[in-house]
Image 1 (cartoon, helix red, strand yellow):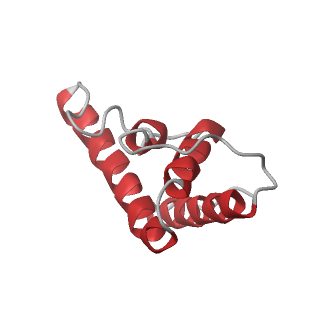
Image 2 (cartoon, helix red, strand yellow):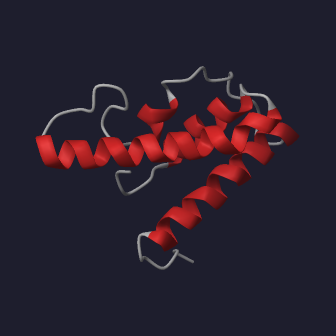
Length: 102
């Protein structure tokens, strides 16, 4: 995935997860992160957008799926989706060998 990750990236992925049934959210989140990573590598190698996943941003990868309307931040399901995105993001950062920002 392209770095830095912007707040809109997190929001877009959380909205995609919110539109999915609860049992499908973790696999979908990982699919979005994987697609963004694939697209980023494709862009570096070929200098053009990935035909399916776009520019390597999480925002673009998430938008391949239906996004729920953006709810208020105190919506419990949206908070759950946002926490899931942030956990996966933290794992991706650590996996890339970077210490998470504090």
